[in-house]
Length: 440
Image 1 (cartoon, one colour):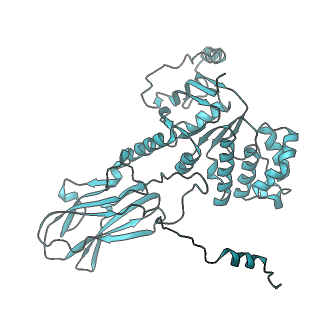
Image 2: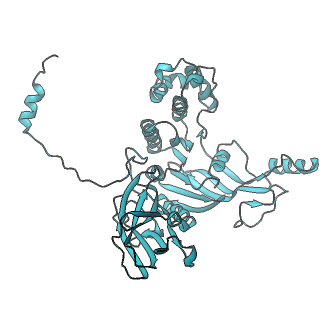
Image 3: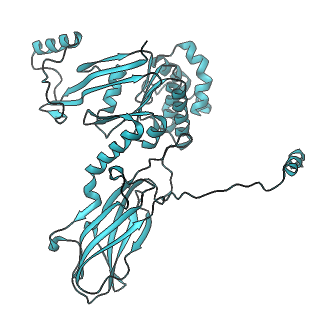
């Protein structure tokens, strides 16, 4: 007997932009009949699978997606916003029907696509647990047996008999996720559930999903948290513009996804000026090229936390009356200056020069960075070169099987070595353990 639990063939979903129905009643009838008989929409043209998402007033949210998922697999679905990830999950959850293609599912499906769907603001947390559990497919007896576990997981037991309209947004989503997380289904579909709650609650969510995977449940997991995808999933599906760009082992697909984003944003990490009159600078010197790139050959050109980063600037010295040097400020997403560096005094003679430096690997935390450049002349006059500002991203591709899978809050991530050694004999420790401490 086959262990395939989900089979998807040529799945497509098309939306007609700005149109509710067809232009005539007969066209509407033909479309409804085609849907009931499992045939393609007669108003659509098959088209070329490689063209863009929009054709006329038709928008292809998904285009000819095919894959199979076996029992116990954990599939991470990744892609940029608008790639079709949520549409795919809604079709698999039977919330919306496909325009074309077929789906075969074996087993009970539990979906968590929008946390809190079905909660009534005027009902208490207790009442909403039963209401939401019933909407998600749990029986009353099943909810009663798991009620204490659900409330304990959510951490809102003190307010369980308070109307949820008085809950904070964090309390609301904690209770909603707790209900959905206790579904006993063979197939679990999750869409961006890690975006809810605080850091401590996200750890609990990740742990719950990890338990589901270990117990042989099939999981489809959509998230922009690449660390969580790599840690929880053994397989990844990369969607781009509604089409399947890659499908395979998570360690092979994630770099492809990140590399595609890198190619699309590559212009921000390299700036060049061929016309000296428009190049950033002043009458002393002009910058003609700024580039940030990996300092060593790496797959797909990705900068990870372990990758040393090369900063290169090329400039033309025009006059030699003033002493000047170049200074760089590296700024993170929170506008914190992570580090500053400078070239030292630049050569005095007019000419074209290139200066390089390397930021060592295992220093910067993951995230987005901007490199700001300024001229400092005669050790006093500063000129910021806004046009020469470059951007780059550092990716976290470390595998973390246990613990926190989010981003650490620090600006730097240096792998410090800790050593732990015993400070006493075993006999001393045993005597200390048996000693009664005085009451205070």
